[in-house]
Image 1 (cartoon, protein in one colour):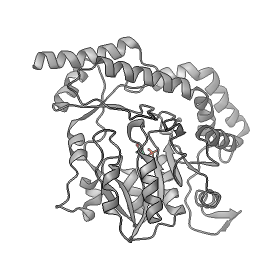
Image 2 (cartoon, rainbow, N blue to C red):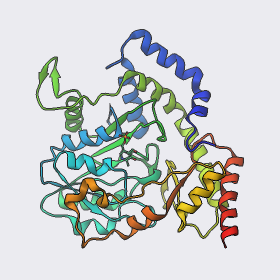
Image 3 (cartoon, rainbow, N blue to C red):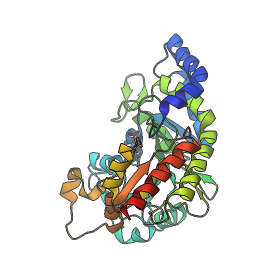
Length: 366
Ligand SMILES: Cc1ncc(COP(=O)(O)O)c(C=O)c1O
């Protein structure tokens, strides 16, 4: 059993993916090929925004979004204490200050009622993550941002395709980013990412920033990066985007089966009303996580820990460390979370085997 079975996925779409890649090679349009523009149009339509701008990774998408907002040294960006490093490291890379807020134990997203107390005169933006595939609670976040004149960026690296009150992830904020890392709900065959916005000025800025700050050939107006997506990756993504909704339906089915079969004493993920998760991860919480993980490994079940260290406790943010501040929910999750196999190509037998093995563990241990 695979944690995320990309081989099965490739076998299912091989007859479409191989010619799509071959066509880019035949045209040798490896950079700025026509698939980039076509994919951007399809992504924008799927999400329901004016502009989708592809780029080299979900990390660079965050960097470009923050550069487009002209984040200055010392300016603060509010983000969750529990996420992948890139959410906060890109703020720091620009010499901004990530201001960490604990997460909610219900949806594992930024605790909305803890944001306002962190807003200062230096706050520039709020950067919520839509964790494990479920959107953060954007209505109150956007209301708060409006009250204080702040920007909002959704880190939708794990939530492409999810929805919130019928609106798609990456459509509800000034800027939003996603990742096309191979194991993501929509993944390519290497690194890739995208930025979404309805704002024409920000879109234009990002277009320039992702291509060395170039406005005409060898005319560089601002300092930018080489943040482009490769055409071959765009060709792969165009095929996979066509199958995304079927895959999301399968992920939902497997998540519901896990919820039905797993022992109720575990902390099971909850999807809030009016939200649809894409189940980027199916992550449970359990006290003896490491022992269960070892037991599952012995039974041939791969698992992962997303994430073992809350962001404020990462050495990279050591200079920001405040010993008086605690992040209870983030710390609890870091000690207890375990992600189970999740992808569209699982079988009912596999889900039943995982659930039964976990149940057996608890029966023997009890
Ligand atoms: C929440 C979050 N933000 C950002 C990223 C960075 O994306 P990438 O790996 O494409 O750079 C990831 C990737 O795992 C992520 O999970």
